[in-house]
Every structure is written in structure tokens, then in C-alpha cells.
Length: 350
Image (cartoon, helix red, strand yellow):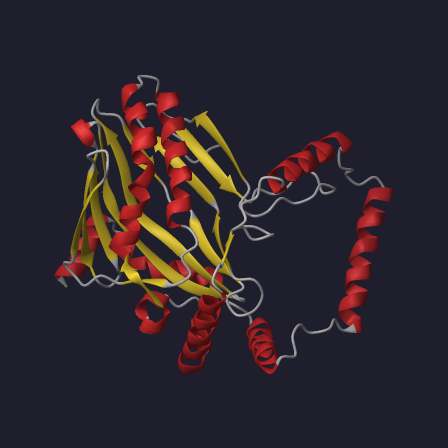
């Protein structure tokens, strides 16, 4: 009870994190299709062929789109489509060799993919279909075979690896827009340090601590302050007290169709010596093709950074929808960002 009270004091909504996975609910037909595909993959059948009804439906939809355009429907701007296609071409020409074709980081070790799939398939058979209905997987014991030799605290500490490249400059500037830009750049750059983890980190025991010394003199202190739900608290102090990064994080895991979703929640604050503060939001993570296809890790949704004192907000949008229907879609790891001035009286208004 003491542990639960501590979490509620940090954030009254933290105990309802599992309920957020109601959005992962699947229909009976989707569940049936999921298990049929799993059985086919195990038997080596592969992808199911389209029925004649699916083919007819696809043809009707294509013709409907054509009729809409013919009878005065909205037509895409050729200039806009060309511009977006040029962006896609530029993005694809600079892809990392570790990148998945459709977006995210693809798994590099085929043996890991085989291991993860065998363990997840075993869990599905043991636990049943309730896992596909959004149950928080953090309440389910994970087999040790599917874990990496690092704890959640160690993975969290890796995020500070690039702080020395950006945050001293952010602390030195008096321009709030430039400071916010540097902070966003720092956290986006740090994504490469923690992305592509396909084996689950070990859950620290309650009260477990970790201290880290970085090469620039920064120090981090981390502690597992709650076990259910798993809550990790942290404090990272920059050299010369230029900045402090503190807060706590928790997360919940759920299954969708051939994917595993992770929702990050908590509080993350970056505070500078002059009193300036920036709230660091959380994007969402998705591991796609966990049962068949090329397994990959993606970051999705919106990532919001807020400077409340200056009414400034930076928003990073991953996988934004194309502005033109005729343009090519970039990979899901393509993102756009903007910094805007918002009204404190209506912070949700964009």
C-alpha cells in the first residue's frame, strides 16, 4: 500500500495507466484472423490469398475515388505532390542501413527475432486471447529467455549520452526559443541510444539504485521506487550545476494485430540554473511484425516539449499524414516539428 500511495502522490492518474489500453480492443473477427495467420506461419503456408470478394471491394473503392474526382471532388495540387515526393526521395536517399524500409529500426539479429517470436507465441497460448484485448503486459511475467542483460534503469541512463553536446549550449543562451530548439535537438538525437531494443530490459527490484558518471562530469542517480506499476525515478545533474533533469517514468505494454505497443507516461523536467524549465513529453513506441514479417521498432505519435513560463511549445509529429493524396508516403520514422507560442488560458488550442 505504501508503494501505491507514493505513486498516486506523484501523479493521480498513474494507477489508471492500464485502462488506456482499451483503445487496443479487437473485434472477434480480428482475433480470429490473428490466430489463423499465426497458425499459417507456423505451418509454412505464408500469406493468405485474397478472396474474390476482397478483390471486388478493392476495385469498387478505386472506381469510387475516380468518380469522386470526376464529379468535382477535391483534386490534389500537382505542385504540392511534387514537393512531398521530393521530400520522400531525399529521406530515402539518407536512410541508415539499420532502418526498416517502411520506417523504424529493423532487428539486426535473426536469432533474436526467432527467440522473441517463440516466447511471445508461448505466452499467447498460455494466457489466451485476453492479451489481445489491451491487458497491461507489465502484470504478466516475462520469460527470462526474452530479456537482455540490462535493467530498465541502465537503459534510462543511456538517454543522457548526448546531453554534453547540447545542454551546456542551452544553459548558456538567454533566448528561450533557441534554448527550446537545442533541448528538442538533444532528445531527438538521443533516440538513437535507446532505439532498437528487441529484448525486454530486466525489471529492477523495488529499491534498486544505479549511479552513473558521464565523461563531462555529469552524474545521474536512478531508483526503482515502485514495483507495480513499475516506476523509475531519476535525477541527472549537469557539470557545474548548469542543469538538472529529473522526474519519474512508467509504462504499459499491450498487443495489437502483429504488433506490441508501449505507452510511456510520467514526469520529465529539464531545469536550468537561471530557473528556466522545460517539460519533456513522451512519444509512443511500437514493435511491428512481432509474429511475421520484418520485425522493427518505431516511435510514433506526438512528442511535446513545453516551456510554460514563456508560453512556448515544440511539437514533433512522427509519421505525419501526407498533404496530397497523390504523393508518396515517407517511412514512419519521418517527422516534422514546429515551435509555437500558445495561449496559457487555452493550452490545448493549436
